[in-house]
Length: 206
Figure 1 (spheres, rainbow, N blue to C red):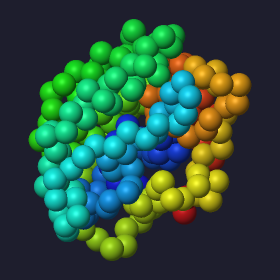
Figure 2 (cartoon, rainbow, N blue to C red):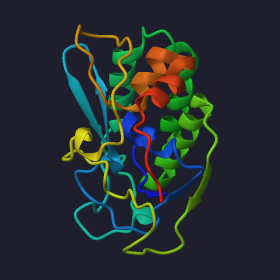
Figure 3 (cartoon, one colour):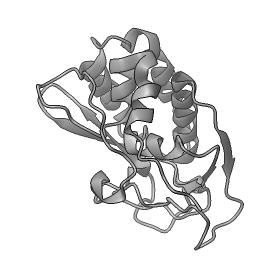
């Protein structure tokens, strides 16, 4: 499968890569604004919060590997503050939180590098082994193409990749589906992978 690299991706994203032994990350596309490439969704006390990484030259055609993060805005403190506020008292935050804080504190120059480090630690904490490779060039058509499919403007129900299996969350009486993988990891810990497997819509791959 081939998929774009996203920032602390959603459960839909992980349900998708769950079913493929080899995951090819698109490394030669142009950055797309208002996508999950630099945005994730978490649940806070009163609302659903969208955390967005500011980037340099995001309005121009910039290859994703060349897109630099803008640290003139103190976004790492804002993001970590929101994450800590949302999940600091969740059952598994003390076990997993520091992994994510260390990566954010490193302040990588490029969005692609940050997202890849975060994806790598998520897979490790999920105990999910995948063969991760990168595209060598951009191809308009590829086999098992999931690029751009998981998008803020596309309800997960339209993609038929993720069927929410409810789990205990920190806030509210009503389950909120398809948040960032952080929500599942911090709330469910070592049960996260089995919940993902129960949420994945099994594909019929030719």
